[in-house]
Length: 90
Image 1 (spheres, helix red, strand yellow):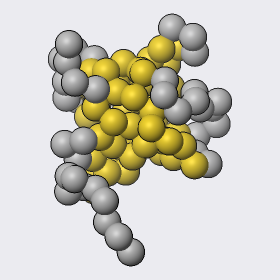
Image 2 (spheres, rainbow, N blue to C red):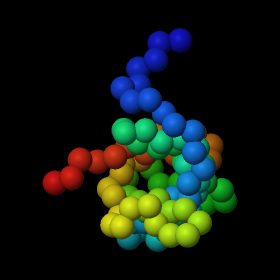
Image 3 (tube, helix red, strand yellow):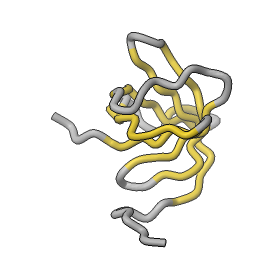
Image 4 (cartoon, helix red, strand yellow):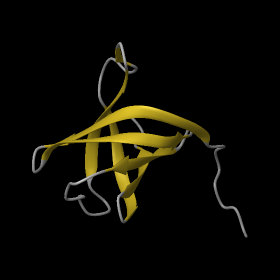
C-alpha cells in the first residue's frame, strides 16, 4: 500500500472535545495523533460534514492538554471515526 502521510502517527487514547456553534460539543477519543492531525472515535452523535472547522480541546484525566482550543478541520469521516487536520494559526 502506498503510504502518503507526511507525519508519523502515535497511538493514544486522549479525550477530545470538538465544538462548533451549529452543533455544540461532540466528545470523542483520539485513537492516534500526529503533527498533522488526529483520528477521533465518536459514539452516538451526528458527525458534521467534511470541511467543517471545529475548536478542539485535548484532555487528560486531570485537566486539559492545551490551554486554548485549537482549530482543526474535519477532513473525512467513516462510520464513527473522524479524521481531523490541524489548521495553521492566522
